[in-house]
Every structure is written in C-alpha cells, then in structure tokens.
Length: 233
Length: 220
Image 1 (cartoon, each protein chain N blue to C red):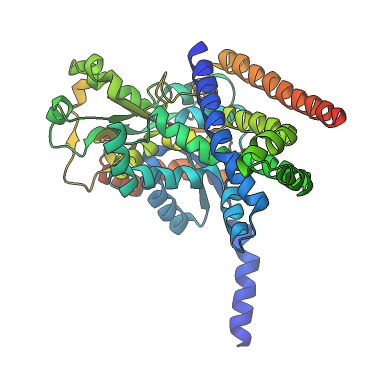
Image 2 (image 1 turned 30 degrees about the horizontal axis):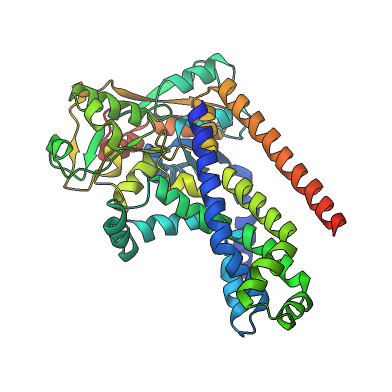
C-alpha cells in the first residue's frame, strides 16, 4: 500500500516536469488523423497535444488575434504563408504535411450529379475552406457548376459538410477523402479536376514541445497515418 | 451586402408576426390557467433561454431531416425538407425566440390581475370581447416589449442558422452568418461595416423599448 502511494506521488511530481502541452489548431478535414497522430506523439514523447478543430479561415483569424496555438495545420498554403509574412508564426517553419484529396459521397460516379432527382448538393464554403474551392473547381471542370448552382448548400467547414450528408439532409456532398476513406460508396475525384490541395503546417509559437510535434509530424509514424487516411505525400 | 440585411429583416418580421399570433394566446393561457401542469408548459416555452443554440440546431437538423416523420410531413406540404430553406429558418426562429415574446406578454397579463376582467364580465362582455377590448389594450406595454424583443432576438440569431441554414445567399445567408463569413474570409472592412450597423441597431432597439415602455407606464 505504502509503495503504491509513493508511486502515485512520484507520478504527480514527475509528470509535469518533463511533459508539456502543445496546442495544435487543425483544419477540420485533418482532425481525425491528427487525433491518432497526437496519441502516438504522446506515447513517444510524453508531451500532450491539445487539438482545436475549425475551418482554416477561422483558425487563422483566431491566431491573428492572439489565440494560444503553438502549431497551425491549415488546409491550404495561403494562410500559413500569410501567418509567416505578418510575423504571427516562426519564419521558415512552413512545410507541406499532406496533399488533400476530394471525394463525392455517397456516390459511385459523378453521374449522380446529373440525375433529375438530385435535390441538394453539399460543398464546403468555397471562400473559406479549400475543399469547398476544390469542389467548385470540380463542378466547373465537369461543366456542372452553373446548372447545379441553385442546389448547392454550404457547410461552414468540411466537417459540417460531411455532417449534412451523414444526417441525410442532402443527397450527396463533396467531402475530404479522409472523412470517407473506409466507406465503399464514394467517388474519388480525379486530381486533374481541381487545383492540388497542398496543406501546410506552420510553427506559431516556438517551444521544445512544439518543435518536437512538428518533427514528429514529419516522421515515419505520422506519415504512415497520413497515407492511411488517403492523403498524398 | 444589402441582400443579407433584407433577408434578415424579412425573417425577423415574419417570425415576430407568427410569434405575436401564437404567443399571445399561449401567454394568456399561462397567465390565467389553473391547470397544475401549466408550469411544465411554461418551462418548455422557456427552454430556448437556457439551451445552447447548437442543441436546438442539432435537434432541428435531425427532427426536420428528410427521414424523420416531421421531415416527411414537411416534404408533403412544402415539397422539400426544411433544413437549408427559408421556411426552415422561420420555424427555427419561432422556437428560438418564443420565450422572448411569451414571457413579457404573460407578465403583462398577470400584472393586470382579475379585476378589469371581472368588471367587464359584470357589464356582460363575452370572454372574447373582454380579451380583445380590455385585456389586450391593458397589456400593450408587454405586447410591445415582446414584439421588439422577438424581432431583435431573431435578428441576432446565429447558432441555429449556422446549423440548419447551409449559408445559401438570398435564402439562408442572414446578417450574422454574412458577418461570420466576412471575418473568416479576411474581408474585415465588410465585417466592420455590418457589425457596426448591428451594434447601432441593437442599441437603438433597446433604447426605444426602454423609453417607450416608460412613457406607456406613465400615461396609465
């Protein structure tokens, strides 16, 4: 009993000395893989990664106004670059951690888009979410943007877009492949239909734990998780 | 930039109208009824005061979705399910702003007591007659407060619309959503203009309400 007590006390005393918390702001499409990466990161380094999910645009605005994030995983390249330029992030820390892929779900081919009984089609807000932009580009490539414009419903970010589909409030939606990677009934949009979705990460606040997280994200364990969720390297 | 403003005014106006028509009899019943379970109804009406709009939005999304019984009913009436439509927003707003109308009106009915109605009854006024010609005029300050609060609260609605609106320009993209959109897109100039407008509007609403309520009380 005494030893258990000493053991518990030693846990309390020792844990905070080495482990630090890393606040990670992540674009909605990458939230599920990131949670897995955060777990693996904690197992390996003992540091805890605290994850905040939002749309890239909102997270950037929050960082610009002093949000306490250490690392920012965006869904585009524009906001991390802007963060560096405006002195909100560590200069030169930017790198591409994933190439996003777009999927139409639930669907086996783009034919569902031209069927007469299509009532609503969900996309992420093209102004704020890169996956929404890619969805609009895809519709334009298919020459379907103008005919389908009135059927579009806009999710605040890609997670809400998926939720519209999951609750069956829309017939189909353009979502991130990572969200439906284990679902059979999806159409993976060919890459030439939209501009590549290069997703950049930037170090917002420099600390050993934040550096460790960024290094871990570049490492093999994280790469394997990222690939498993359908992202390109 | 004018489209979301007009849409918001249309939504708030229609919602207020529906709330006055539905809310006034409900407030009357809550003020007068002797039923032991009336406070349970009162509590249900007051729920949106306490519940986060996300809870309301989440349930509305599920309850009005195309697979629910309510959703099926809506499809047979309107030809489409309610989320992502203006009709859906009106229904959401009516629920969301209900306590802001019912509470002040109920208070006004309760404050007038039984005496004016008893007097009307001794003068052989029918219940309906005394409701329209005695109770309603006496409750005028409460009715005004209810209408203004219902309108203002609907203008300020955000969470519910975010969850069931779908951000469709001209249909569900109301003022608060438009501001949110501008902020996220780094279009801070537009966000500033709309936000400042909202601030001035809200201040004026509250001020006018306070001043006119005071005047009505004095006159009596």
